[in-house]
Image 1: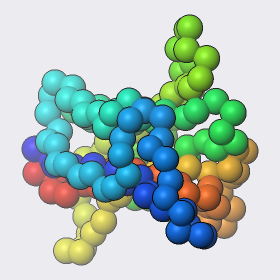
Image 2: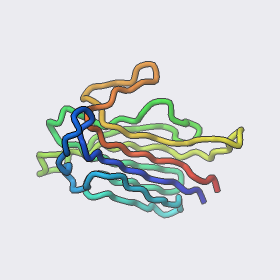
Image 3: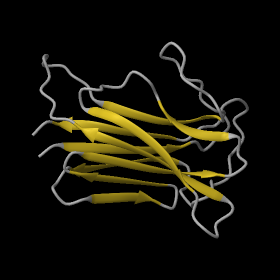
Length: 158
């Protein structure tokens, strides 16, 4: 059974001036939160407040990230991740009825059987907030000011 780590980080201070930042919508206080979860046959999910939800099941990974409408930011996956593990990236948006202040960005991946060729290997996805409309160019992705971040990392193969 494969094991994954989930790390969610929220900045406490401004990137440029060091001023304290307010608690973001969704109720997760600034800091870094980490947990480990196994990939089983039945879906397992974890939430951090009302800002993100990760669902892991046999061969599938779904990441739901909350974004405030009108924030001029959106979530994106950093390029150059290990596509030998995380394949067929799909992203959609879910706008809940009757909730005008936020929407969910949903990223879905197929989890492939991974047999590394080397004893040192990595398999990690990084989700970051970027300015709205930003696209990766040449393997680089511009992040937004004072951005939160989420990492999903494969820790063990079996």
